Length: 173
Image (cartoon, rainbow, N blue to C red):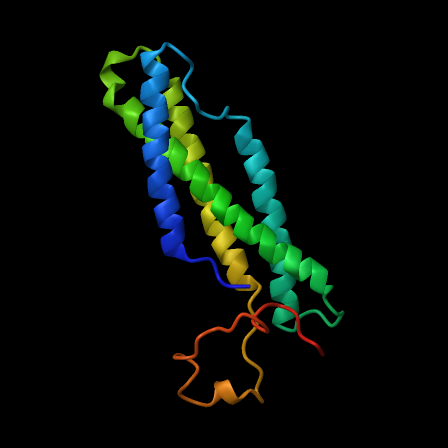
């Protein structure tokens, strides 16, 4: 598996800022509710963040040699996939709610109730937290090159590009 490309996350986020902004304009124009997630979604996001972080720390401890028991390779792959899904989901949430926040901020002085604005900001912050945890845990799942690898010659370590296989937390020891 390849590492998550941060520039792809930026492109997705920018596209969803526009989509969230446009959706907010349309719902306001037609008198519909603003399309923002309820604050209870932060609880779900928190559970996902904690689960991702706990699984990532398990992989990191095994990778650093602090655990002698063999790590289940399926668990390592699930952790990696969960981390990447967390990063992409956080990007979507951040972009969508940042667009809503931008539109709500424009009308800040005209509204008597700014609860939706604060709600959108809280959800955008939760999305940002998901991105950070997802990218960090994804890095936890990488294993350093083996000592006997031809690519690990002195001087090449900083210039070596990761390959698609053998880079993540499954060692065939």
